[in-house]
Image 1 (cartoon, rainbow, N blue to C red):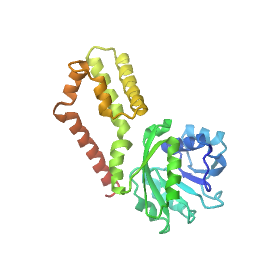
Image 2: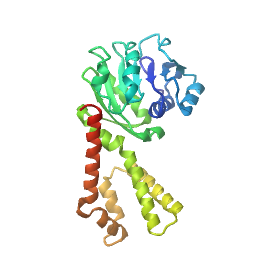
Image 3: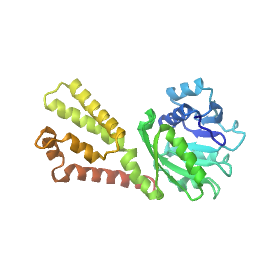
Image 4: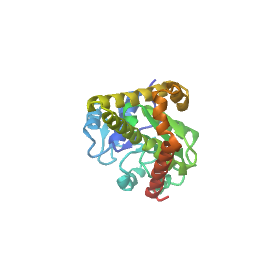
Length: 275
């Protein structure tokens, strides 16, 4: 079933995340004719997609003949005010502003828009690049149920979508899922180094660590069982897994480490957003 929008979508920025969302939306059936890209220098992969699908690009917004149904803000946070200020003039009374810029608050967009403008702040993560992202959204009071449904439909093009009602929670969301892929990749690094220390050749240790983590993630995604149950299913009393978990879980050391790490990421997010 093709993705239908009530009007054109203006995408500000076709970098890694903006480009991934563009690709996902096109895969879901969004018509290239309904898309206008504002990006003076998209990366090669996005530029190729834009050219192949005949998507309109504009250094300015002259081609935008009617108000967009969505303005998707996907440029770097440090240049967002400059870019969005120009785009905001083209917002209509029903336009949804959907931001995927890390750390940028709803208020920072509202400053450029009329008081009744609908705004949704979304935090996707990098697995969105392969359609397995996790996005959490938060809306302002002006966003209607229809706006929220539209935001969900758009972000579902690159994975799963959840909502929170309190914007203050977005820093915790960023700490868990936005930054979370880096924690998983570091786990692979640690497992690889531990395998080498245990006597494995580096290439084999890396393959075992990568495949184990990716396979475990796929298993987790394929079942409704809690992660704790899956852990117990692998753990035989007195066996090798139990011996390793005695180290990892001793004194709640790993649990405490993650609590401190995620709290540090949350606190840094609050600092960056002025919270």
